Length: 109
Image (cartoon, rainbow, N blue to C red; front, side, top):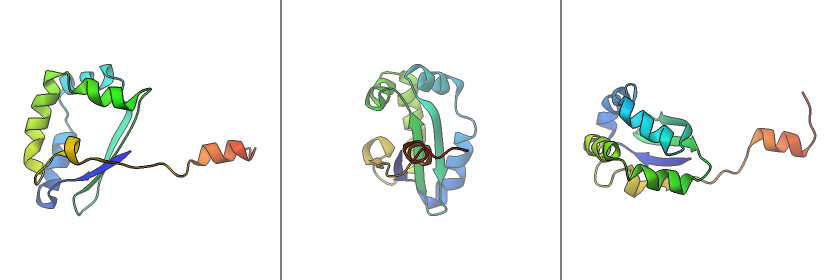
């Protein structure tokens, strides 16, 4: 899970672009091991993203090898003041997972 910010005045367009991500970009994410990838936004431009991968660092690095990623990042640059998400992304630390604690406490349905 990670977070970054987009310009609040561009949030609507940022959301619109993510409603129709290029098929080539979707394939690249899939091929580099991104699974269950979701992005959430707040009204102030806050963006929180989540994805699963066997090796998240490799998945992010491998995306850098795809030309479509460079084109996508160039298209998205207008939504940021200064650094884009690749440079300003803050990784969030998980501290609670319901299913893990239920299993540890042998709590059944």
